Length: 447
Image (tube, rainbow, N blue to C red; front, side):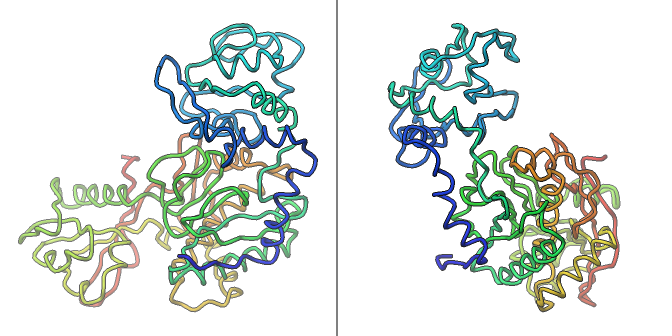
């Protein structure tokens, strides 16, 4: 995990130039305001405190950076029923009364009324702001710096994008044996896209990011082809993972359904196929039971059962010797069966994989990397030349029946961030050590 993974030359050059390019034209006051707005380490946010609503307890301000609600460019980003205001200086100082979505009306802000809003939760007309708006104990000078930055916040570009280049981070564990093959696949895909003109005229590259260092500070967005999305990302960083994250996020999207939902599909399969309502844990299996095998460790106990159900991840982690212990009626849930992958996607993947020059051992891992990247590229293309993180998130939520990945067709929406929500249940024959070529597609939420 500790060793550094070298990014492409393009990515390295961009990252080296990112910081000075971002602040070259801002004043010292605007720079200090920017640090406060984004909650950078060493800013006044580290020592300030906030109060929320009627609570008397003071909380650390560093957990409430302005950008977490108002977005990178101050445009506001609605989440879970809260609609933060647009707080660019242009929006705050419009020379007429503004009516908020809550119905309250306010006059234009001044530097003084802005200070009152941040400290006391009152807008420029003296109306109470929403309880969700923290009240900060900033000094006059700190608020003057923040007010100065809001005048230029429109010029803040999302990281990882310039006129000529666009960098997407790939969360890859250096200790994972599949990492090298996945990076080669991503490099080959980027090369194919760049030969055709890039992403709306920008050269695309995928820069490796170790899981413990995953953030959106220097890349436009992230793909996580080795599992769920990393935790702790800023809420505006678009991230596409294979499996859903443990906590939902407005910017996180997953290709296929979670392990828990695959288990639910297996249990539903047991009900519909054999009328078995109670599915037990395999570790305590008895003769005649239908059981769920949660880990390879209980494979020896499972041989006593009549039927064994397991997810693909459990099945693939199981040594051949343990698989040989399984009873004849054993079934595996597969979230991305080849039978449900569009032929054009299979052909495109095969061509890119051939150019990557990998062997046969990591083909499933390569398919995961290819699929996450293909969906990200689709969203970037749809967003257009004037690309932004918010625009990519909106584009992803507009995807319907996307057939460019090595998955079943993917569909998303504002309240649906998992592209394919079912699993195919296929039989495993322990005698021939083979999975059946087809099975029963189960989508729990559709029944």
